[in-house]
Image (cartoon, rainbow, N blue to C red; front, top):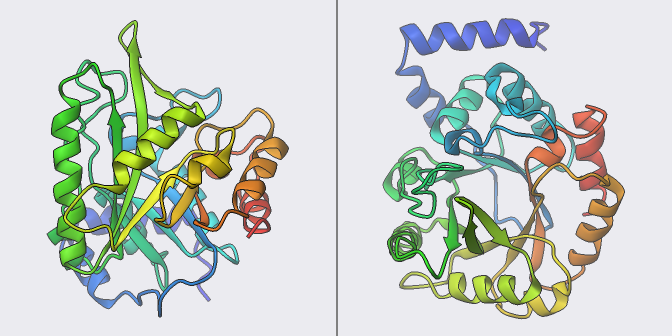
Length: 293
């Protein structure tokens, strides 16, 4: 077993990126993929926030702006028992490939990051990261897309159409499409997701119908009130998202645990809540979430 520190591994990664860019494709080609079909409850680490300029975690506005620190946190999480995989943009996935952290893991590529946080064009969430062909070529397991539906913003139509094409493209390649839908509103220039049960039911219903087939579509949904009604809106498998770092981690765990009992809920996809927990213990936060499964 290597005794190198993470700082040494990070330094080697930086050097490799500078002098041997072909190492990324080589690492992808030799990576051991997740075996079989996931039938148990899933625990996926979400790490695609930085590419959308969303760097805040808790009270720290630039928490995710330190790439070395973020990668170390992700590696700690991926090494915990019961964690099956990660989702991220190409830069983060390729960093993790070069660090050797993705062996035997499910890997989902994040596709649309063009709706930058706080931008005037935030709802026009263009596909600026992975494409379906690139996900297939890299040997990943699927793609994730964010769908924010703002009824008063005509740019929503472009995002809907793009997500539909991505769902179709992934399905044609036998890959999972993970859709994260929200009804959204803009006030004072800021886009806010509407987290009422009625809004989430509507968002789930819209997302379920995207693309030429729903056979390989999974949903990524927030935990809100009346989750029984929310999850009754679709027969598609769903994973629960974590959202912001919670003020009350025990309450968040209780909400996840209750929702996990619903038949279409297949696991958790959690990022900042586990990577930047209150108290700073990533391993303990991950273990507590895995314990719910």
